[in-house]
Image (cartoon, rainbow over all chains, first blue to last red; front, top):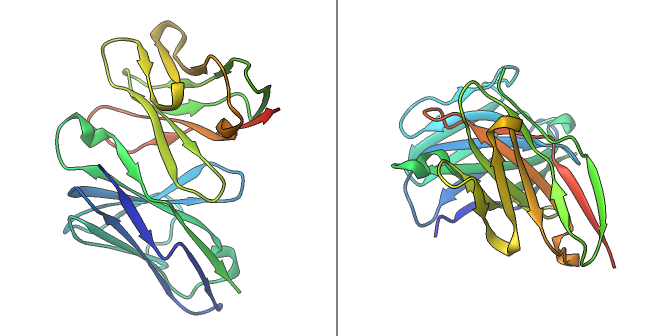
Amino acid sequence: GAVVSQHPSWVICKSGTSVKIECRSLDFQATTMFWYRQFPKQSLMLMATSNEGSKATYEQGVEKDKFLINHASLTLSTLTVTSAHPEDSSFYICSASIASGPSTYEQYFGPGTRLTVT
Amino acid sequence: AQSVTQPDIHITVSEGASLELRCNYSYGATPYLFWYVQSPGQGLQLLLKYFSGDTLVQGIKGFEAEFKRSQSSFNLRKPSVHWSDAAEYFCAGNSGGYNKLIFGAGTRLAVHP
């Protein structure tokens, strides 16, 4: 149980275009989803926290107009990288928390999306 | 400030040897603590977690971790390492009531045959 999927797993886009990444909780309802960015050989950096039906909360230094997050349902959150540039190339990972109980504090991670901007 | 520290960036062990990966935390109260493993190009898989209770926690793949409040540590151990254990290991923590995870820098484990 507690499976999180991401789509696509790998995407290449041209500089200046936008790309959308989907994160889905397949077998549970997630009130909170998280988006992370990971550079090669580095740790995960939290970009934003999204709660279903609410605006996302962005971490300091993350441009909310560039990284648009939508959490329209309890099973789906999307990250849109707008006007992508080569420096946005990275590995993006989402995670989701189960809606209730002690497991609220546990995050289940998706397999990640490799974004390459040319 | 809350933080999670993994002092070892890279560790190499021989297959069959024992393993201990270090993790220290800095929180005002006892945090919830996690160990994750990441294979190249993959997401994170939860190895084990500590919320409260027994300070020795058993996880998957033969891993265990011990919470030591006096040392602010949550070290990961395995008695006999397999070549398939080669990966990146992340320690993470969050405060009760606030579910944002703080990750350590990670420890890359290499296993020699």
